[in-house]
Image (cartoon, rainbow, N blue to C red; front, side, top):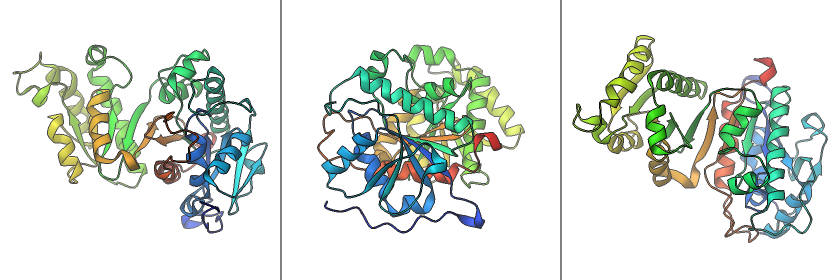
Length: 351
């Protein structure tokens, strides 16, 4: 690759004359593939037609990624989104300058972990101040994050803390299936204990609202059971479906939300893949993540629902094994930016 992809001029207005949303793009762990997927994604013509992206990260690391990729572009430090200019071949970056010049690619680093935290902190501040409409995150490395003293299970919990939100949900989105999780980064036994009707109800409502915002006027939502075959009328488990899920579904249906279940998880995703459901509600991490990664990880996007602004991310990790080689695929980052733009309507302060 010897030149930047040809990009159309970035329009300042989208549909109905509304300004294109400003999206803060956090660089993630600088030792991983984040810089290498950000550069081509922000030069992509579709990205520039859909949003105004501003990277929160390290300008020199992005320049190094561009050199590795063989891409010619202008990576321009700016003080904030208001200073950014959106023209083909230009990448705007709020340059925190936290990474050492000799940071190796693909090696765990507490310095990179701390920098990744600081990128997210600044993006959250911009969102709360109303300076950006959404956040799109490149992957971080949890071990590096923890080594730097920032002990959070992942982006979802970190952003919830930084924005003062007590409860959010993780949603995974692919072209074939979308899934929202009732529980995520906890052990399976803990997940079953934590699931209760109120949490199920709130999760479904967050998923319903996100789908409506994305343009699905009356989403059909399939809600998984906990046990094999959704308990099969008490044959498996200890009645968890009847006590933890069914009461929530009754309330939701009474409010006009089309939430169906509890469904056997092994068939629910097949039905969603063929179009029977707009959204699947998974009870725990692997129940949702496994099928999504089979049905569409190459174009998968991770969304956090319930924050003051939408947050999207690629659905892959830092890929230390290929970082710095120029072999990372940017398709998921392009899709994450597209969905951030699609679901970001107004700055947090304006809501």
